[in-house]
Length: 318
Length: 248
Image (cartoon, rainbow over the protein chains, first blue to last red):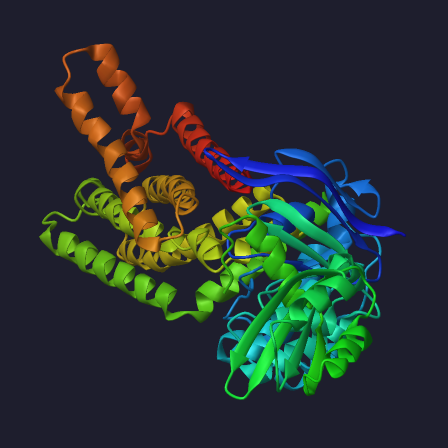
């Protein structure tokens, strides 16, 4: 696996505060990597360190195998960055701003990419290219901010909460734009919207209180946490005598019974990765429980996030 | 080197365009010329014997001293936003991530403010020209006085730029810059009050008004140039360090 970004035991301390502690994870080339964590977890600090905006207190950051501290100019050129607060000059026109960004980013470069029109087209900014940035809607301003990160055709695009503060329509538009970038760029994206991660990302890293809680391909993390699984069943009639039978015939860790109105909801916590729904159905039918439904609870990103941040105790999530 | 200068020129052009597209510079220029003009003509009318010596002593020298006080207000007003606004709008990150170095950022901001001040001072040249039309010919004092104003502006701008790098709040930057300038002005007052000759001399040397007066009177010495150049260099160095410290 070729690694676009690699962080090895990265730490960052300010007087009296440890922002990052032994942060180690990597971003695979060509992937869309979601970076999740509650407010103040260290996402922006990590991203600022990767881009070279701030140096780490310890550890190593590599971009395509090259140390960010040893080769800052070289690695900087391969990264396009959208910081948490869009760095826009409101008094400039969109075209003027992007040309300015292109110019200040290519002062030391011998090869200049004439990707200006392409970027305008990709970000849907052609129609507003002659308008002042301060007069644009928030959604369009965010597009301009993403466009500045794409100018110069960087291999890696780092987006720090690109959809925060946008209305639902703009969120969908920006999400589609990010999705379209996956063909040409490796993307590291921090977000608060877990649903967004499910839709766009193939890898995730969860950070909490400056420590990495989980990192890897989403499907692997999901299957990894399926050492125990939850299955829910709804039955019309329930008797407590059935409970020992279920514990005898199934690798049950726990069974939660909740009777509500005319039916009973059973939550099975089982060990292992096998699908036990057929077994459960068989037992409940044999016991004349009048089975109404049976569902296996999938471990989505939301649960992964919840589990990872709850382990630390005080994880906040907005 | 060519790329390095191009970097300065890119940011300088952006700053100049921003400044001259906003009404702020024109309002300041208008106030400067109105106040300067009013004082100049008041002094001219008050000057009874219009000889070259009396015009220099009672019109030109007081006018240059007045410009100095106006510059003490105008320079911090011009510089207060230069870096603090970049910080406030987070565009400083864009500059840090670009190929521009801190020195280039500081120099382009400095030159853009100098251009605006030169534009303002340029408007006041009208007044000595009027004297010239009336027969005044001591141009050495005029040139020396304007050179003093240029050096003084450079000093105030470098100090204002440093103040602007310390906070993202314009008002704080403005107050800081004015207080630092007043602090230096008080050095001259303290120099006059001290009994210790050496201390008095040192305090006077560190105050910009002492060196500016030499320019205005046409008695410029090499140490006056050294003072202003080292003043500008020192505050540019501090500004550059202040920008660097933000990265850590």
